[in-house]
Length: 134
Image 1 (cartoon, one colour):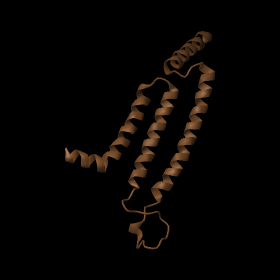
Image 2 (tube, one colour; image 1 turned 30 degrees about the vertical axis):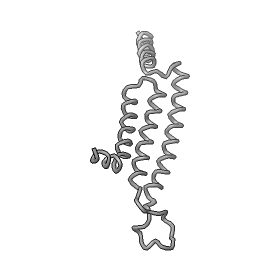
Image 3 (cartoon, rainbow, N blue to C red; image 1 turned 45 degrees about the vertical axis):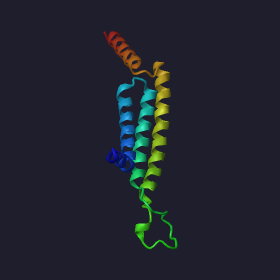
Image 4 (cartoon, rainbow, N blue to C red; image 1 turned 90 degrees about the vertical axis):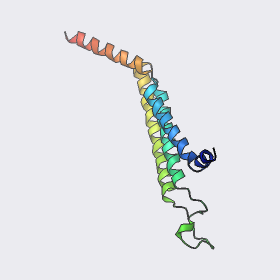
């Protein structure tokens, strides 16, 4: 039991990010509502960002600003993962905004954001177009 507790204390945060990522992936595969798919995509993005931020963590590290008492580079936390994840957050917000705009257009055109309803309406429109050509 002690081995399990030690493992969870050291690596448990990575397990949580993996669970969060696969929860988002499962939701995207199973949900038929496009809004829910967009939310699940955001959950996956948050899991990836959280994973990289956890990798950038360092025990006993300090902010990467020249300070007295910090002898060398080993005393500082690497700022690169944090900077990259700030960019990823901006990209995530952009994709969410574009996704919401597309959902609004889908709702205007089809009257629904349910995948099954949209597929049925598309098949109905294709059948009408083929009937018009004959």
